[in-house]
Amino acid sequence: MTTELQTERLYLRKMKLSDSPSLFNTWSDPDVTKFMNINCFTDENQAKDMINLLDELSQDNKAIRYSIIEIESNEIIGSCGFNSLDFENEKAEIGFDIGRAFWGRGYAPEAISSLLNYAFSSLKLNRIEAKVEPENVNSIKVLQKLNFTFEGTLRQYERVNGKFIDINIYSKLKTDWNECISPMKGGV
Image (cartoon, rainbow, N blue to C red; front, top):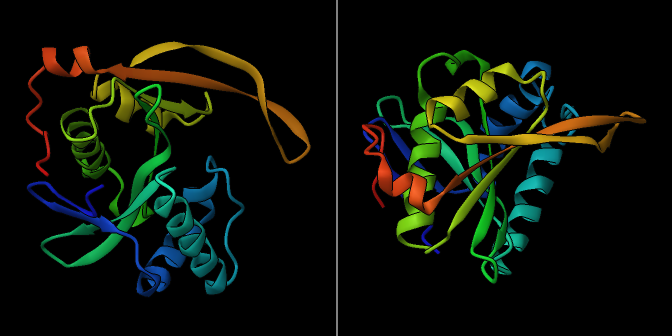
């Protein structure tokens, strides 16, 4: 698997332990982590532990996470990647987070577009999934902008803070990707 992707404004590279201060800033913001499957971080060591865990999953080809770097400032603005890779069934689940200071600039769709291009062109996957809490309006807007298909609601799918919550599932198939030419398509 490639460890680097690039778009017009963004450079995505596999996370490194040295990214922990920047990623801690993102993952310690309750507005960013509100809909993530992690609790808001309170110590930079939690970011280091997360990066180490993601590295282990990457070595087993089960997941890969990229730090998103804004090319102009050379600043880490968030992360994205494949939360789970299933090569037998040619599918993956994506996830992404962007620091609050960078919201509203189109960085999430640009980064995800690059992941999609890589998934369908290089990894030869057939299906990309995204699971989103129905209240996560911003992430849903990103998926809609990229023409993901809403497949339905998985009722009481996960337990968060002791209560079961619904999760919406969205997908994009390789045939969907081939049918549209996206101006945000990122290269490998």
